[in-house]
Image 1 (cartoon, rainbow, N blue to C red):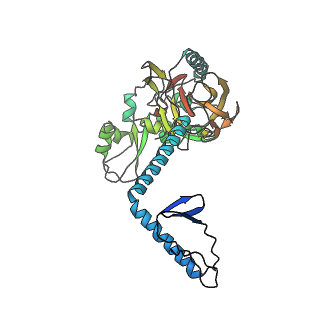
Image 2 (image 1 turned 180 degrees about the vertical axis):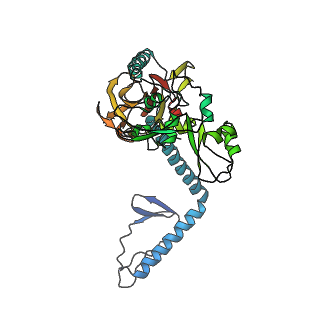
Image 3 (image 1 turned 135 degrees about the horizontal axis):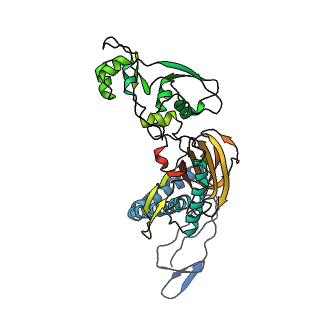
Length: 400
Protein backbone atom coordinates (compact mmCIF):
# COMPACT_ATOMS: atom_id res chain seq x y z
CA UNK A 1 0.00 0.00 0.00
CA UNK A 2 1.27 3.42 -0.95
CA UNK A 3 1.75 5.86 1.94
CA UNK A 4 1.06 9.51 1.20
CA UNK A 5 2.26 12.27 3.48
CA UNK A 6 -0.24 15.05 4.16
CA UNK A 7 -0.63 18.06 6.40
CA UNK A 8 -0.36 17.24 10.08
CA UNK A 9 -1.98 19.52 12.66
CA UNK A 10 0.51 19.63 15.54
CA UNK A 11 2.61 22.01 17.62
CA UNK A 12 5.67 21.18 15.55
CA UNK A 13 6.55 23.21 12.48
CA UNK A 14 4.18 22.26 9.71
CA UNK A 15 5.01 21.74 6.07
CA UNK A 16 3.41 20.31 2.99
CA UNK A 17 5.07 17.56 1.01
CA UNK A 18 3.71 15.80 -2.01
CA UNK A 19 4.85 12.48 -3.48
CA UNK A 20 6.68 12.77 -6.75
CA UNK A 21 4.27 11.15 -9.18
CA UNK A 22 2.65 11.93 -12.46
CA UNK A 23 -0.02 14.55 -11.73
CA UNK A 24 -3.04 15.89 -13.50
CA UNK A 25 -4.73 19.10 -12.26
CA UNK A 26 -8.48 19.49 -12.15
CA UNK A 27 -10.08 22.50 -10.58
CA UNK A 28 -8.70 23.01 -7.04
CA UNK A 29 -8.06 19.32 -6.38
CA UNK A 30 -4.88 17.37 -6.90
CA UNK A 31 -5.55 14.01 -8.58
CA UNK A 32 -3.01 11.21 -8.38
CA UNK A 33 -3.46 8.69 -11.13
CA UNK A 34 -3.03 5.02 -10.37
CA UNK A 35 -3.39 2.10 -12.71
CA UNK A 36 -6.80 1.18 -11.36
CA UNK A 37 -8.15 4.09 -9.32
CA UNK A 38 -7.98 7.89 -8.70
CA UNK A 39 -7.37 9.39 -5.25
CA UNK A 40 -8.30 13.04 -4.77
CA UNK A 41 -7.68 15.25 -1.77
CA UNK A 42 -7.46 18.97 -1.03
CA UNK A 43 -4.64 20.76 0.75
CA UNK A 44 -5.66 23.01 3.66
CA UNK A 45 -4.05 26.31 4.79
CA UNK A 46 -0.99 25.79 6.93
CA UNK A 47 -1.15 27.60 10.27
CA UNK A 48 2.34 28.71 11.34
CA UNK A 49 4.05 31.73 13.00
CA UNK A 50 6.12 34.19 10.91
CA UNK A 51 9.65 35.01 12.08
CA UNK A 52 12.15 37.76 11.07
CA UNK A 53 14.41 35.06 9.73
CA UNK A 54 11.61 33.84 7.48
CA UNK A 55 11.06 37.38 6.14
CA UNK A 56 14.74 37.90 5.23
CA UNK A 57 14.90 34.40 3.79
CA UNK A 58 11.88 35.13 1.60
CA UNK A 59 13.34 38.48 0.47
CA UNK A 60 16.68 36.89 -0.29
CA UNK A 61 15.06 34.10 -2.24
CA UNK A 62 12.95 36.65 -4.14
CA UNK A 63 15.98 38.75 -5.10
CA UNK A 64 17.84 35.62 -6.15
CA UNK A 65 14.96 34.53 -8.35
CA UNK A 66 14.62 38.03 -9.81
CA UNK A 67 18.33 38.16 -10.60
CA UNK A 68 18.25 34.79 -12.28
CA UNK A 69 15.19 35.88 -14.27
CA UNK A 70 16.97 39.08 -15.43
CA UNK A 71 20.10 37.17 -16.43
CA UNK A 72 18.13 34.60 -18.38
CA UNK A 73 16.11 37.33 -20.14
CA UNK A 74 18.80 40.04 -20.41
CA UNK A 75 18.49 40.37 -24.18
CA UNK A 76 14.73 40.81 -24.01
CA UNK A 77 15.01 43.40 -21.22
CA UNK A 78 17.63 45.46 -23.07
CA UNK A 79 15.56 45.46 -26.26
CA UNK A 80 12.47 46.47 -24.28
CA UNK A 81 14.30 49.39 -22.66
CA UNK A 82 15.50 50.66 -26.05
CA UNK A 83 11.98 50.40 -27.46
CA UNK A 84 10.48 52.31 -24.51
CA UNK A 85 13.13 55.05 -24.63
CA UNK A 86 12.68 55.32 -28.40
CA UNK A 87 8.93 55.72 -28.06
CA UNK A 88 9.37 58.41 -25.41
CA UNK A 89 11.87 60.24 -27.65
CA UNK A 90 9.55 60.11 -30.65
CA UNK A 91 6.64 61.39 -28.55
CA UNK A 92 8.75 64.22 -27.11
CA UNK A 93 9.98 65.21 -30.58
CA UNK A 94 6.44 65.22 -31.91
CA UNK A 95 5.24 67.44 -29.04
CA UNK A 96 8.19 69.84 -29.47
CA UNK A 97 7.73 70.05 -33.23
CA UNK A 98 4.01 70.69 -32.88
CA UNK A 99 4.55 73.45 -30.32
CA UNK A 100 7.35 74.97 -32.42
CA UNK A 101 5.24 75.09 -35.55
CA UNK A 102 2.29 76.51 -33.68
CA UNK A 103 4.50 79.18 -32.06
CA UNK A 104 6.38 80.34 -35.15
CA UNK A 105 5.36 82.05 -38.32
CA UNK A 106 6.04 80.69 -41.78
CA UNK A 107 6.54 82.68 -44.98
CA UNK A 108 3.34 83.80 -46.66
CA UNK A 109 2.44 85.20 -50.07
CA UNK A 110 1.07 88.73 -50.37
CA UNK A 111 -2.51 88.67 -51.62
CA UNK A 112 -4.70 91.47 -52.98
CA UNK A 113 -6.04 92.38 -49.54
CA UNK A 114 -2.57 92.78 -48.08
CA UNK A 115 -1.39 94.78 -51.09
CA UNK A 116 -4.32 97.16 -50.58
CA UNK A 117 -3.50 97.63 -46.87
CA UNK A 118 0.20 98.17 -47.62
CA UNK A 119 -0.69 100.86 -50.15
CA UNK A 120 -2.91 102.60 -47.58
CA UNK A 121 -0.14 102.45 -44.98
CA UNK A 122 2.36 103.95 -47.44
CA UNK A 123 -0.11 106.74 -48.18
CA UNK A 124 -0.54 107.38 -44.45
CA UNK A 125 3.23 107.49 -43.94
CA UNK A 126 3.73 109.94 -46.80
CA UNK A 127 1.97 112.56 -44.67
CA UNK A 128 4.82 112.39 -42.16
CA UNK A 129 7.33 113.19 -44.90
CA UNK A 130 5.63 116.58 -45.33
CA UNK A 131 6.56 117.44 -41.74
CA UNK A 132 10.27 117.27 -42.55
CA UNK A 133 11.26 120.81 -43.46
CA UNK A 134 14.96 120.09 -43.88
CA UNK A 135 16.50 116.79 -44.92
CA UNK A 136 20.05 115.53 -44.61
CA UNK A 137 21.65 112.65 -46.44
CA UNK A 138 23.44 109.66 -44.91
CA UNK A 139 26.65 111.71 -44.64
CA UNK A 140 25.03 114.56 -42.75
CA UNK A 141 25.01 116.96 -45.70
CA UNK A 142 21.98 119.21 -45.91
CA UNK A 143 20.08 118.37 -49.10
CA UNK A 144 19.69 121.29 -51.47
CA UNK A 145 22.68 123.17 -50.05
CA UNK A 146 25.97 123.63 -51.89
CA UNK A 147 28.41 121.35 -50.05
CA UNK A 148 31.59 122.92 -51.47
CA UNK A 149 33.98 124.64 -49.06
CA UNK A 150 35.27 128.18 -49.52
CA UNK A 151 38.91 127.61 -50.45
CA UNK A 152 40.00 130.96 -48.98
CA UNK A 153 38.59 129.90 -45.60
CA UNK A 154 40.99 126.96 -45.50
CA UNK A 155 43.97 129.28 -45.12
CA UNK A 156 42.46 131.13 -42.17
CA UNK A 157 42.34 129.97 -38.52
CA UNK A 158 38.93 128.55 -37.51
CA UNK A 159 36.85 130.97 -35.45
CA UNK A 160 33.97 130.27 -33.08
CA UNK A 161 30.88 132.10 -31.92
CA UNK A 162 28.20 131.14 -29.40
CA UNK A 163 24.51 130.51 -30.12
CA UNK A 164 21.72 129.92 -27.60
CA UNK A 165 19.21 127.30 -28.77
CA UNK A 166 15.64 128.56 -29.07
CA UNK A 167 12.36 126.66 -28.87
CA UNK A 168 11.61 125.02 -32.23
CA UNK A 169 15.24 124.97 -33.37
CA UNK A 170 16.62 121.94 -35.17
CA UNK A 171 20.24 120.99 -35.63
CA UNK A 172 19.94 121.39 -39.42
CA UNK A 173 18.15 124.70 -39.10
CA UNK A 174 20.91 126.08 -36.87
CA UNK A 175 23.56 124.86 -39.32
CA UNK A 176 21.86 126.63 -42.24
CA UNK A 177 21.50 129.81 -40.19
CA UNK A 178 25.29 130.04 -39.86
CA UNK A 179 26.14 128.96 -43.40
CA UNK A 180 27.24 125.44 -42.50
CA UNK A 181 26.50 122.56 -44.89
CA UNK A 182 26.99 119.49 -42.69
CA UNK A 183 25.28 118.84 -39.36
CA UNK A 184 28.31 116.71 -38.36
CA UNK A 185 30.06 120.03 -37.66
CA UNK A 186 27.77 121.14 -34.83
CA UNK A 187 27.45 117.61 -33.47
CA UNK A 188 31.22 117.08 -33.31
CA UNK A 189 32.29 120.52 -32.07
CA UNK A 190 29.69 120.46 -29.26
CA UNK A 191 30.05 116.73 -28.54
CA UNK A 192 26.27 116.21 -28.88
CA UNK A 193 25.51 112.60 -27.95
CA UNK A 194 21.95 112.72 -29.28
CA UNK A 195 20.44 115.67 -31.16
CA UNK A 196 17.04 114.67 -29.78
CA UNK A 197 18.18 115.96 -26.39
CA UNK A 198 18.84 119.45 -27.79
CA UNK A 199 16.97 121.88 -25.52
CA UNK A 200 16.04 125.55 -25.53
CA UNK A 201 18.60 127.59 -23.61
CA UNK A 202 21.48 125.28 -24.46
CA UNK A 203 24.59 127.11 -25.74
CA UNK A 204 26.40 125.84 -28.84
CA UNK A 205 29.81 126.70 -30.29
CA UNK A 206 29.50 127.55 -33.96
CA UNK A 207 32.70 127.24 -36.05
CA UNK A 208 33.32 129.47 -39.07
CA UNK A 209 33.79 126.47 -41.39
CA UNK A 210 32.50 122.92 -41.69
CA UNK A 211 34.59 120.19 -40.09
CA UNK A 212 34.99 118.06 -37.00
CA UNK A 213 37.29 118.06 -33.98
CA UNK A 214 39.88 115.33 -33.47
CA UNK A 215 41.74 114.43 -30.26
CA UNK A 216 45.36 113.46 -30.85
CA UNK A 217 46.31 109.96 -29.70
CA UNK A 218 49.68 108.60 -28.69
CA UNK A 219 51.67 107.78 -31.83
CA UNK A 220 49.76 110.20 -34.06
CA UNK A 221 51.61 112.60 -36.32
CA UNK A 222 50.24 115.58 -38.19
CA UNK A 223 51.06 113.94 -41.52
CA UNK A 224 49.30 110.66 -40.60
CA UNK A 225 46.20 112.58 -39.48
CA UNK A 226 46.23 114.62 -42.70
CA UNK A 227 46.57 111.51 -44.86
CA UNK A 228 43.86 109.54 -43.02
CA UNK A 229 41.33 112.37 -43.34
CA UNK A 230 42.37 113.54 -46.83
CA UNK A 231 43.32 117.02 -45.65
CA UNK A 232 46.41 118.90 -46.81
CA UNK A 233 49.15 119.21 -44.22
CA UNK A 234 49.45 122.96 -44.83
CA UNK A 235 45.70 123.36 -44.29
CA UNK A 236 45.90 121.66 -40.88
CA UNK A 237 48.74 123.96 -39.88
CA UNK A 238 46.85 127.10 -40.98
CA UNK A 239 43.39 126.18 -39.63
CA UNK A 240 44.77 125.21 -36.20
CA UNK A 241 47.41 128.01 -36.05
CA UNK A 242 50.23 125.48 -35.58
CA UNK A 243 53.81 126.68 -35.83
CA UNK A 244 55.27 123.14 -35.99
CA UNK A 245 54.19 119.61 -36.75
CA UNK A 246 54.91 118.46 -33.20
CA UNK A 247 51.80 117.08 -31.48
CA UNK A 248 51.01 115.90 -27.95
CA UNK A 249 48.48 113.25 -26.89
CA UNK A 250 45.18 114.87 -25.92
CA UNK A 251 45.67 117.91 -28.15
CA UNK A 252 42.49 118.90 -30.03
CA UNK A 253 42.63 119.67 -33.76
CA UNK A 254 39.96 120.98 -36.12
CA UNK A 255 39.74 118.95 -39.36
CA UNK A 256 38.15 121.18 -42.05
CA UNK A 257 35.74 119.63 -44.55
CA UNK A 258 35.64 116.31 -42.70
CA UNK A 259 32.34 114.73 -41.55
CA UNK A 260 31.43 112.03 -39.05
CA UNK A 261 31.28 108.45 -40.31
CA UNK A 262 27.78 107.16 -41.05
CA UNK A 263 27.50 104.89 -38.02
CA UNK A 264 28.58 107.63 -35.60
CA UNK A 265 26.28 110.12 -37.31
CA UNK A 266 23.32 107.73 -37.03
CA UNK A 267 24.04 107.25 -33.33
CA UNK A 268 24.33 110.99 -32.65
CA UNK A 269 21.14 111.66 -34.63
CA UNK A 270 19.31 109.17 -32.45
CA UNK A 271 18.64 107.02 -35.50
CA UNK A 272 19.93 103.72 -34.13
CA UNK A 273 16.94 101.72 -32.96
CA UNK A 274 16.98 98.99 -30.34
CA UNK A 275 15.42 95.61 -31.07
CA UNK A 276 11.68 95.78 -30.33
CA UNK A 277 11.87 92.27 -28.82
CA UNK A 278 14.22 91.77 -25.87
CA UNK A 279 13.19 88.15 -25.21
CA UNK A 280 14.43 85.17 -27.22
CA UNK A 281 13.11 85.18 -30.79
CA UNK A 282 13.86 83.82 -34.28
CA UNK A 283 14.35 85.92 -37.42
CA UNK A 284 11.71 84.23 -39.59
CA UNK A 285 11.60 86.48 -42.64
CA UNK A 286 13.89 89.34 -43.74
CA UNK A 287 13.11 92.60 -45.53
CA UNK A 288 13.09 92.60 -49.32
CA UNK A 289 12.26 90.37 -52.25
CA UNK A 290 11.84 86.67 -51.59
CA UNK A 291 10.47 83.56 -53.25
CA UNK A 292 7.48 81.93 -51.62
CA UNK A 293 8.60 78.44 -50.45
CA UNK A 294 5.47 76.78 -51.88
CA UNK A 295 4.63 78.70 -55.05
CA UNK A 296 8.04 80.16 -55.91
CA UNK A 297 6.34 83.50 -56.71
CA UNK A 298 8.48 86.57 -55.92
CA UNK A 299 6.95 89.00 -53.42
CA UNK A 300 8.29 91.96 -51.46
CA UNK A 301 8.39 91.65 -47.69
CA UNK A 302 7.86 95.13 -46.24
CA UNK A 303 9.55 94.56 -42.89
CA UNK A 304 11.37 91.99 -40.82
CA UNK A 305 9.65 89.25 -38.82
CA UNK A 306 10.61 88.17 -35.30
CA UNK A 307 8.94 84.89 -34.35
CA UNK A 308 8.38 84.23 -30.65
CA UNK A 309 5.63 82.98 -28.29
CA UNK A 310 2.35 84.84 -28.10
CA UNK A 311 2.30 87.38 -25.28
CA UNK A 312 5.99 88.34 -25.58
CA UNK A 313 6.38 92.08 -24.76
CA UNK A 314 6.93 94.46 -27.70
CA UNK A 315 9.11 97.52 -27.01
CA UNK A 316 9.34 100.94 -28.65
CA UNK A 317 12.48 100.76 -30.80
CA UNK A 318 13.04 104.51 -30.32
CA UNK A 319 11.41 107.27 -28.30
CA UNK A 320 8.56 109.09 -30.00
CA UNK A 321 4.84 109.78 -30.15
CA UNK A 322 2.21 107.10 -30.79
CA UNK A 323 0.77 108.28 -34.11
CA UNK A 324 -1.74 105.49 -34.68
CA UNK A 325 -3.27 102.49 -32.90
CA UNK A 326 -5.44 100.42 -35.20
CA UNK A 327 -6.54 97.11 -36.67
CA UNK A 328 -6.97 95.86 -40.24
CA UNK A 329 -7.19 92.57 -42.15
CA UNK A 330 -3.49 92.46 -43.00
CA UNK A 331 -1.64 93.78 -39.95
CA UNK A 332 -4.19 92.82 -37.32
CA UNK A 333 -3.61 94.95 -34.21
CA UNK A 334 -0.85 97.44 -34.97
CA UNK A 335 0.87 100.57 -33.62
CA UNK A 336 2.72 103.34 -35.48
CA UNK A 337 5.28 105.54 -33.68
CA UNK A 338 6.49 108.86 -35.10
CA UNK A 339 10.09 109.40 -33.94
CA UNK A 340 10.73 112.70 -35.67
CA UNK A 341 13.65 113.38 -38.04
CA UNK A 342 11.60 111.66 -40.74
CA UNK A 343 11.44 108.26 -38.99
CA UNK A 344 8.38 106.14 -38.18
CA UNK A 345 8.11 102.51 -37.05
CA UNK A 346 5.25 100.03 -37.41
CA UNK A 347 4.56 97.07 -35.07
CA UNK A 348 2.03 94.58 -36.47
CA UNK A 349 0.08 91.40 -35.61
CA UNK A 350 -0.14 92.24 -31.88
CA UNK A 351 -2.32 90.13 -29.64
CA UNK A 352 -2.83 93.25 -27.52
CA UNK A 353 -1.99 96.95 -27.86
CA UNK A 354 -0.97 98.74 -24.66
CA UNK A 355 0.16 102.24 -25.71
CA UNK A 356 -2.51 104.82 -26.59
CA UNK A 357 -2.66 107.20 -29.55
CA UNK A 358 -1.01 110.53 -28.74
CA UNK A 359 1.09 109.04 -25.93
CA UNK A 360 4.81 109.88 -25.77
CA UNK A 361 6.96 106.80 -25.17
CA UNK A 362 10.64 106.36 -24.39
CA UNK A 363 12.93 103.89 -26.11
CA UNK A 364 12.27 100.47 -24.56
CA UNK A 365 8.71 101.24 -23.35
CA UNK A 366 6.35 98.24 -23.59
CA UNK A 367 3.71 99.15 -26.16
CA UNK A 368 2.01 95.80 -26.79
CA UNK A 369 2.21 91.99 -26.89
CA UNK A 370 3.20 89.61 -29.69
CA UNK A 371 0.31 87.85 -31.41
CA UNK A 372 -0.90 86.43 -34.70
CA UNK A 373 -3.74 88.78 -35.61
CA UNK A 374 -4.42 89.77 -39.20
CA UNK A 375 -2.77 88.00 -42.13
CA UNK A 376 -0.36 85.81 -40.17
CA UNK A 377 0.68 82.16 -40.01
CA UNK A 378 1.90 82.19 -36.41
CA UNK A 379 2.83 84.42 -33.46
CA UNK A 380 5.43 87.00 -34.47
CA UNK A 381 6.16 90.71 -34.68
CA UNK A 382 6.21 92.29 -38.13
CA UNK A 383 8.50 95.32 -37.69
CA UNK A 384 8.69 98.08 -40.30
CA UNK A 385 10.72 101.30 -40.51
CA UNK A 386 9.89 104.34 -42.66
CA UNK A 387 12.29 107.20 -43.46
CA UNK A 388 10.78 110.34 -44.97
CA UNK A 389 7.67 108.41 -46.01
CA UNK A 390 9.56 105.52 -47.64
CA UNK A 391 10.10 102.00 -46.32
CA UNK A 392 13.69 101.09 -45.49
CA UNK A 393 15.41 97.91 -44.33
CA UNK A 394 15.09 97.86 -40.51
CA UNK A 395 18.50 96.19 -40.24
CA UNK A 396 20.17 99.41 -41.44
CA UNK A 397 19.08 101.34 -38.35
CA UNK A 398 19.02 98.66 -35.67
CA UNK A 399 21.88 98.71 -33.16
CA UNK A 400 24.23 95.80 -33.79
